[in-house]
Image (cartoon, rainbow, N blue to C red; front, top):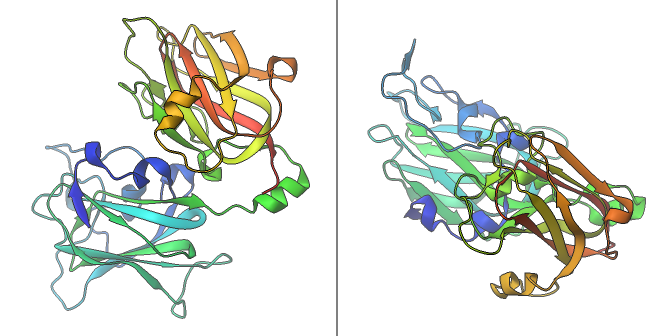
Length: 339
């Protein structure tokens, strides 16, 4: 397990979806103890925050899961039902703001229980062996197991607080069945495996948020660039959860009123094989999927039919924000290609 800041996070944090994201439907279903801080807090999508003077009836309020000081043998653990089943590639056990109350060590197990929550007979697989933890830090660990899992169990030794648990993986979707049905799905949705893989600027927001469910809750819940002071435009490259043919595009500038893009265009391509760093340079020459369209403040913009100028399955999209600005959500509705 590596100790690191979020600025030097491993590649799996950018390549895969956080399956333990509360926003996607992940739930902390059990904890041996969460006296000081509720177990569900560690699944929040926003970074943990610290209020120096905030207390509740049980003591200091902390943004995460925190058990009381253990005075008997054993250790604490929590069970999380992931937002969807998936293959796990890496985890982040984050102790941000826990300085004198973090666990000295932690480990992670996973199981596959598609029809119910685990019980005493469930077989668990260790995917992260016991590792030392430090104060107020991200602790990253790669996972090499090939299994598909629905739940994880986080063990802390012997007690203490975890600010955030992030479980990065690829959602398990039966794309063969979905393609056979021919139904329209959001190919870019987080829950379907969509991910932002590269961007020109993200000064004010997380690019992956544009693929989250629902509408933005405020101006900080979206992708916003700094003000561009040179020629050109800002851009964002999205890898779809599965290649497909696009029927409809939705661009939502919710809450962006004085800082929405003047125009947006979209390019796309079917990228086969290795997806290396050259994808950024190659994206400049991808076919136009959606020609430049004027944007409006705080508005849902829908484009379909003749507005979409290219047909055939694509796996990646380049969203051009011209010249800069903020976008709250992007929906790419279409029919998945047969695997």
